[in-house]
Figure 1 (cartoon, rainbow, N blue to C red):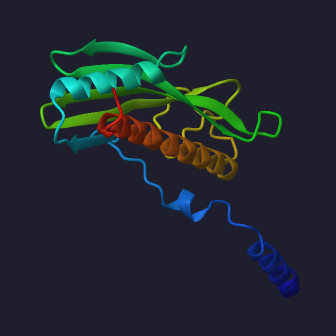
Figure 2 (cartoon, helix red, strand yellow; figure 1 turned 60 degrees about the vertical axis):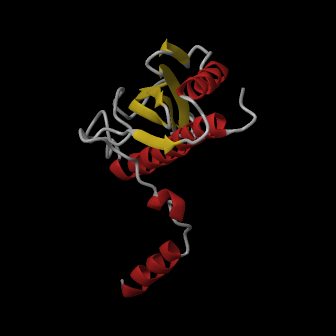
Length: 187
């Protein structure tokens, strides 16, 4: 019996880890209500409120003109733009037992002379088909299983991978908007 336990231990220790170090280290930022929310304020020198707004508006209309991504509201006087977006997140395929879906979100921009604020909030899961996860679950949820009899470990791995993909994508969206506003070539 000890020999079998030793062999199993050795075999398991040789398996690759379920998550890379990056996937274990990421943290989803949350607001005071414990919901996922990405925010970044940036101080800017040399750009007026109007210039920042115009650059942000151009960026929004380049990136948010599809069925799943659109500009909802804009107000140049107040320096605010709001849009809705979605990022696809998948783990495997439905055929191999994976999950597939979208994380819908609200993206907002506001500016005043000397600074601007970008935020992504209201981030919720929307399955593309059959899913083990609850539709509308917040990105920061630990494990939003529909049914308690579903395999916890297998689904936890899937959920963490989807969170990691979405976290990476949303950080990229924020970085893209910020870089566009600050770029000397932006017009």
